[in-house]
Amino acid sequence: KQEMRVQVQAIYPHPGFTPNGITKQDNIALIETKQAFTFGDYVQPICLPEDDGDLLDDNKKGWVTGWGYQKKGGSVNHELQQALITFDDNEVCEKTWSRNMYDSEICAGDGSKTICNNDEGDPLMVQAPSGKWFMHGNAAMSDPDCKLPGIFSKISFFCKWISAMTDEDI
Image: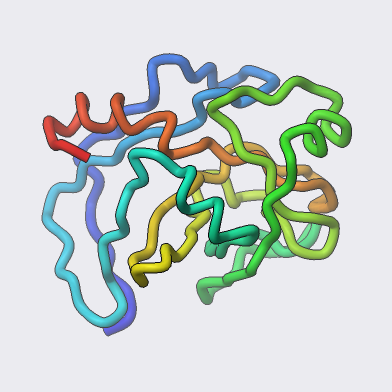
């Protein structure tokens, strides 16, 4: 079995997120499910980075996966899509998006490989030299025309909040 469907018990958005805000800053939430996930070949947990410095020293690219659109006006995919995208300096997103980037954000992607409509919430993952996979980002904001780099919430910035919400050490 390659997929698992679970019911949502509750959604906990970050208290700093404004759903109708222009910047989508703090666009991250935790989802509590009614039942536990069963891990296997196709369903696995991912590590959360307390500090992403070492990850980025070894990685200039990351994998993004999702079911969102691949082009403006397209349809949602029925198979999980994946793309290897390049990390950009935040100045690239500041210039292309004409807005300030925050310390809690990551800029990644280009005109040919980027996040698109309906990709918000999708993971941006990198592999550490140890072989472990880490969730480096969470898709937060995409271009409606699917041509600009994507803006991701930087997971390491939110680890204290995640730890407090889950009562788990990270």
